[in-house]
Length: 242
Image (cartoon, rainbow, N blue to C red; front, side, top):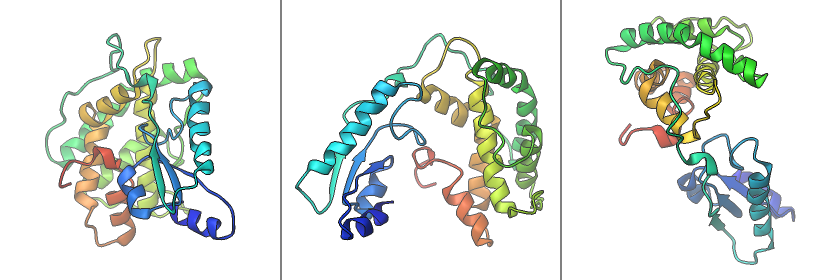
C-alpha cells in the first residue's frame, strides 16, 4: 500500500496510510502514514468502540492537510484502551509450556483442539458469530492438517482450489481464531495483549505455529518458505534472531 500511495499521488490523489509495523513503513516511505500501536488486524483500535475508532480515522485524515513532505510518518498518541489486563480473566486452558520435538507438539495440538471445544462453542453462542472457516476444514481437521506438517508428512491439499502451502496458512489462521474465540467465552473479557500472550506463550497452537516457522522457513518450495517465514507468526512475536 505504501508503494501504491506514490503512484496515486503522481496522479494528483492525496493519500494517507495506516501503519501497524513502523520499521516496515520507514523502509517503504509512503507519502503520508500514521503509525498506530494496535494489534495486527486492528488498524483503528478495538472492535466495538466506534468513538475511539473515529478518533483514529480523523487523526489519519488530518494528515492530508500537512504541507510537509515528501514523506511524513506520524504516531497516533493513544494506546488501545483494552490493553489494560483484566486480573479476573482466566484462560480456558493453560499448558504453561509445550516442550518436545515437532511430533510431540503435533500430539499436544490435536489434544488441545478437543479440550477447547466446549469453550469455543460457548463463545460462538454468546457472540452469535465466528471467524473460523477460512480453509474449509473443520477445526479438528485443521488441527490434524497442521499436525501432519509437523510430523513431516507434507500432506497434499484437501482442496482442489488451493495449494498445500496455502491450505496450511489458512488452517493456521483458523486455529488461531479458534483459540482466541474460545478464550472470549464468559463475561470477563481479556485485553488483546492478554489474549496474544496466552496464545503465543501458553498454547500448543502457538508452539505449533512457531515450530512450523522454524521447520519450513528454509523449505525448498518457495511458496512454503514464503508462507512459513512471513505469514504465520506476527513480526512482533518473532524472537530475536528468529
